[in-house]
Image (tube, rainbow, N blue to C red; front, top):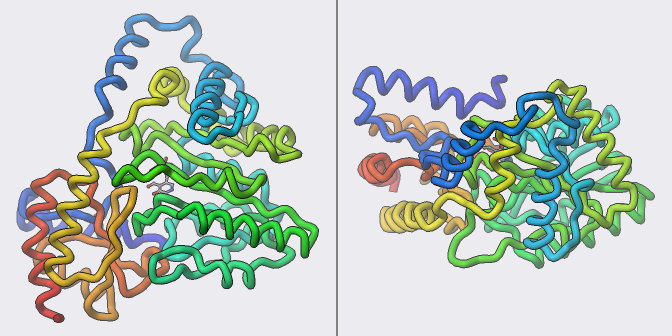
Length: 383
Ligand SMILES: Cc1ncc(COP(=O)(O)O)c(C=O)c1O
């Protein structure tokens, strides 16, 4: 709880500052809870369903989800990737978090290892631990791309999976096709060396939030043991509705057994099935996304100002976070300095990367604009 509580701690400290100074005086860039409302199509579909309920639409269903929804998701993934998915490759889940837990429960024997790249989404460590696994943290390079040499050295007989997250929380980087290709080669080399299977778990809730016309490079093209884990928490702004899915690579030779395991674990972990109403709604919304242009505008605004102020950072290519270097080594001290100016950020050490802060720009323009003053004053103090 202590290791994973940075975001929570910022939330609590923010609440105290709000109480003292007033809501509109505090500029909170610490949370990944999108400010955007779901697109109008979501409300239309919800209204249509509520006014014309399908018979039995609130009952139990197969634990994998509605076959019609799984089929639509499979068609959409096939269209996106050019790889032929069918409904049998998909399990509807309670968000990407549910998908990750279901997959880790299905794959891991006690003591098996899962590689995560730092900076990481901190919950990965908890999810691996939930299912008896052991996390191995591997560093990334200056551009936050996985260090493949260290990856190779870190894989051993017990390595069962590698988790990747592109577009990335907290850095905003998108893994290139080249990196994914080389990663696939490393995995297969080590599989051959140890006579094991190593799964690439691709956590993709930000897949559709990608900028500058970039096309999403999918790991599905580079390894047959890829499992995609995703949700509509970010692309349809529905994090509270807990709707997502996992998809197993159709070319994985034992995918039927793996999918059966995932369906079983979806039930026995107590999720039972993904929310019925949401499965019916998102069936018709696979082509719909929140305004990516709006997020890109917010990214450009914050990035331009941070560079002008003298922050050192990579320009995010997707998701809605920035991960600037702190002007002093101690990121917690810098976060405290920002708090003096009523700006809330999360220290990089909460993501396994001290010396950085995470800023979320999925906030309204007033908050972004209001944060600039404090961000400027804080860096000035140490420059
Ligand atoms: C990288 C990453 N993975 C998974 C999740 C969990 O997503 P969901 O809310 O769909 O479970 C999040 C949520 O912020 C995330 O940032």
